[in-house]
Image (tube, rainbow over all chains, first blue to last red; front, top):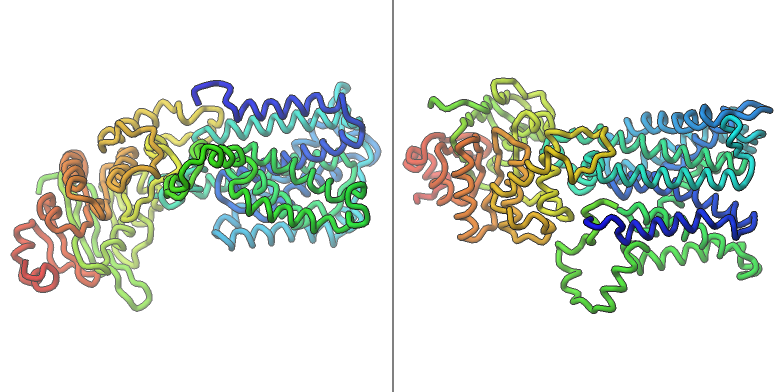
Length: 342
Length: 249
């Protein structure tokens, strides 16, 4: 990375700039939709830290999202505005705490067992809110008054929540970007590549993985918090395994091992969902939107093994017509960016 | 035998159910010496290395590193205390550059993971250590090459370089010459001869010519047990060894 403004960074900055001016041109439906997508992007980024950067496939990420969301609602007074300075750390902290508990136990397992154990822990959280009166049961609960920060930030307006979410997205992206190029991030990359070697080298890998798990859970909690504040409503479906699966699909679709893959994946996934749900396009068939979405995802995973992020490289390869031997060579199985972990 | 004793293993035994993979093995590693362990496949050599490096616990026995009993220590802790190992199969990080492979290894000594705002590629400790280790292993010209694109011999050199980057005192090398051509073998032997000045080296190797050329002490294992140990000449003339292993060479 010799030049300051690499194409990757330029792409991300352009996306963020577009997001910054978007509300000026869009109606309230569009603003709400993009807010939701940005929340998903934050959520996807948090999972990317685990799956793409550390090699830990967590299939229970909705738990942290849901805990952040429920903490936002349960931590707010009945008929008064909560302070953002209290509520936000509460939501993030609650998610981080559950991540610490879940990570401490589940990280003792590996591979497919890890996937199943994380799913089990998430289902545990799901049934706690689903079957107890704690969070209103299956009906969910409403957030009556949106949080404020003193007198200068009130998250009740759609513009305010949009820009607050965008600011969080920028902060999370920047933070993870820093984290992944730091020694901590490089150690995670090493763990993903070869954990045994990392241990032989002198890294106690468990604390690293646990730290990554907690950071990831905290960021997912932030996403859940934003979602609850945006909608003013939470229900147990926010902790359901469908959501854990959806966010996994987002990062796979976008391209694992790249932060911007999570960003792209969240947008594409959500927009595809909107597209297939649209009655204007599909008429009565729109209620079967799962089918169209599912087939599209299967097709894109089959055609884009490295996700949407790998698309330019794939095209370049096709246009230049580089010998396929290059691709088949064992050393070329990684792409040019695998080394820097983004 | 005045050289400094860096690693001492006594009574090392490992059972897998009813099978005794390693049986009451004792060995000493001294600074400035190459101690080779030879034996047929399944003699327990790799299990022994795994026990010494802390990858698996022994069923019985004791491992002392630099005068401390490290038997109960985890592998990372032993590594930080100065025990480096290489693997029989390449365990480099193929997607990283040669420099980053070494740098990440060197980072184990100065991890500071909480300083997340610092760029690892500018780490004032691990980067120079990595460059030095790579240069020592003969890879100074290839620092930016992705490790996955190196030749087999270069990958073996990188294994050693990654080991050296952690500044170990004791090196446990599991078949560093495996699959190497004649020229690569010579280069590796020269490197080992150079390294043994500052380190204690345990060498598990199948290339007998190389072993008898470079080792100061040879331990012969058969079915998990040591049948002979001593200087190359003593081992070569040992009847039991000839019968069991060297096949009358």
